[in-house]
Image (cartoon, rainbow, N blue to C red; front, side, top):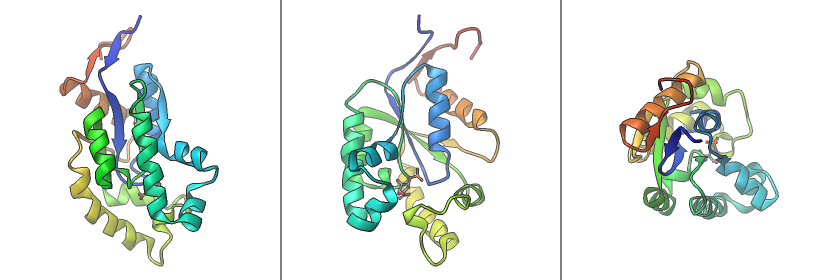
Length: 186
Ligand code: S3P
């Protein structure tokens, strides 16, 4: 018996390093639902890494693949879906998400993002002469668009469990989540 039910697929959006994959995986586990990382699906469909797609085919081709993959996943069963940092910036991807899912912006400040993204150097968007500056510029450009999400949840430097609990509370408060976890009051 399911004690907890989600009415729509949850799409996690936000910058690189906001914790979309980690939060998404744990949230899905807590809700007893499937989890998909759109970036992984794009890599599988293309048969190569995102880095290689950007390098050999360019960003526009990547964005089109991203749009198709997300639309396809939103046609499937209710689940938790983590998207790449640029996905929600694309107007048609945003429209498909608005129509079929509930979007949750994991909002993190510069220091939290920088601390996380600087551990990995293979993100094409940050392969610039001054990645700190690029990250700051992307935050400035993208935050007003992320703010169009249905819900906004702060992703802080603390444990991932705290962010997941805030996402659940936000979903419940907005009426997308009903019921309780087995053996808990949440
Ligand atoms: C991108 C973020 C990446 C990936 C691609 C482009 C972006 O995903 O989709 O490198 O434009 O911010 P993460 O946000 O999961 O790192």
